[in-house]
Length: 370
Ligand SMILES: [Mg+2]
Image (cartoon, rainbow, N blue to C red; front, side, top):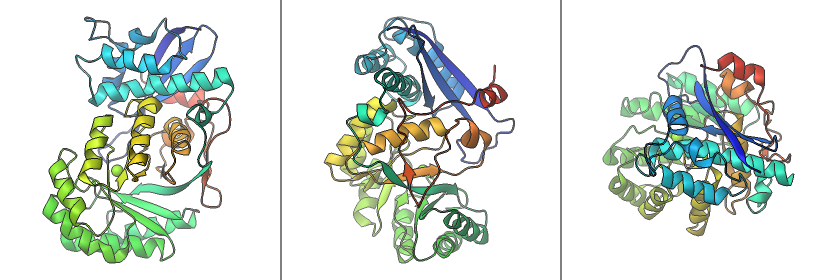
């Protein structure tokens, strides 16, 4: 079997604004084979940047477009093709958007392999340690504490047992920050969990101060409080925080995650659509597991990356939480025919061959930017 074509489909809602909502656009990758089997993947990046990295013609042997690296190759040789893409893009890659773009092709290759072997991807990754994960509704803070309260209450009423609030107003003032966190706890109620995603709002001194101020409201973790390059800050923060520290969604390499582990973080959050797909997320997840830390997916795109994340976390020994994006955009809610319902507070890993997702072609047509 050979790869015959790689399509990079740029999908975008008619209206896109600057709120931290990654479901407003996306890049879907389809890898075609001469056996007629098509694999689907997704990239979380700036979609047109990643599309260019996939489609670029060769400049020289370590400056190649990713599609050229894999066309004509056997799609089942996933590890080798990952290295071929990584080496082929060394000149402009070694992280960043190139690594994010590799994700789309790599996820599609795993989807192809599952369809060829007629097995769900989690089995090819080594098997399921768990077939259901505990989703937290992942949503942005309200603009006011009253809105944050209502958001928390709404998603608990919708069947979730935890809610993560992100970005938006955090960092405006001490009083406002504490009011939002108090409202978040009140909104979800005493019996549920909630997490805080600070969205890079603080310096290390403020982050330590906030962690102590927030502790009485019992957040399960405190995410991305610092700039992602502030590794020294994270070391100091982790040593001085009374609550769990989470980060990692801006890191895309195994080396980046090893560095965060060395900082003493408690929760590591690789995104399968950013870190180079399932091949590299497995390396990262297994490293996190060996260090006895918690690996949780970052995922804020469509059903394609939700499915890939479910297969991956199922196959890691120490994962239980699942970031479940509840944004209501049409791309998030309708691009795949599968909707991943939350049943009794859990989301289940697909059992169909491959990723177990199909694109709704009418949704692709509606949002495709040509
Ligand atoms: Mg986050």
